[in-house]
Image 1 (cartoon, rainbow over the protein chains, first blue to last red):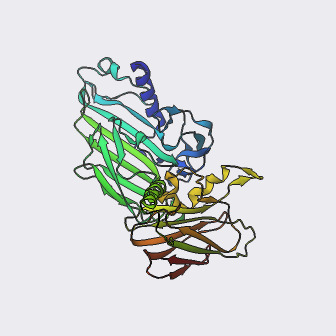
Image 2: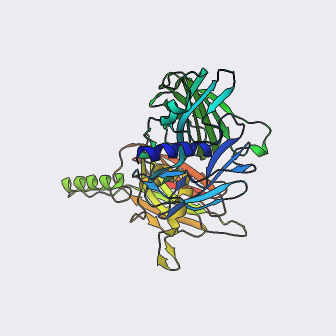
Image 3: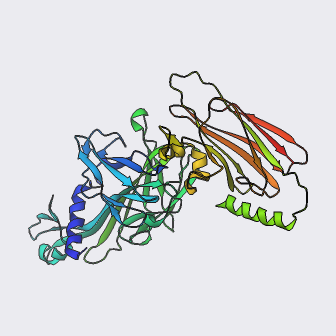
Length: 275
Length: 177
């Protein structure tokens, strides 16, 4: 992929993902995560809502969904459809092993004030920013300039046959989850360990929230709140079987110039089975 | 894979002592599939295996749908994962069907299967403590796991049993020396 295309794609992706500042949560919900058929398929719902896995607000756009097969190649999604509350699409799993289904994006965002105190932002709302345009778009004399390097990632994993690790290798871009426990080998009552990386290095002190599905039928969020340790690790003991939504947020000031801060958000859906 | 290794090492042992008149030890497993008064009944998928103290498994029998409309078909493999514990321990690492292990589903009643030491699929077992595990999963029904611990080899024929509550009746294990 050439650089131009990559940059354009990245910025296009940002527009498809909700800002973490919004209360609404984006999620992917696979119909199954553990499959034994020789002709295995999964169907996935993609939506944005407050109640995890209850499609009652807005569909997620599916154009930027990337499916990575066990051999590392990308597979096209099939039967994509966007409805009022959710999008759906199918993925055929022709190979045995673990697939990653999700989307990722990264970009720059600048905020400053002009001489007269007017607040400016680049890219503007709904606009696409090409990091190469930074010098052109942000004036040299900008006051109180804050430039942040942002990354967003959202994914889920499904396995046909025996779990494999090829799709779990980090890209070293943005906030990522590196499973120590395989994401399709999760069982109620057992502890799972995951590591978080920011640009390939341990993300220390990332805030992680794990919420079980089915929240419409209970009064509380029942969220498990965690913080990554010095190695970027967390350990989650699944209280019961079901679908879980995990989200993580990280921020520091170790950004690459011209950015002054960097932040990453991550969300994933995991299925926990009864033993 | 493991059972294949065990079998070949057994054959080697056989050849070293060809003349000895040996009565092979065996595991005799009786599995009761209960008659269930339900509107829609399908014969359950059943898996039988043993685990040693290290948690290593030997796959002994898997009863599942092997045919579709009278023809051999792999379509029934779609639901093998519903025997969740078997799938995690054995199934997902195994290319089904396996000769001498795969079999058709069975009707309600008592079914007895015998596994002989030195022969596939049991192979040669090291002395130690084991658990016989029987798991059943039924379409539009439930799932149940019944475990029977045993010591190998048995000094005298020993019978042990455990009972399921819904999907499995009595699981009886006779270990013969």
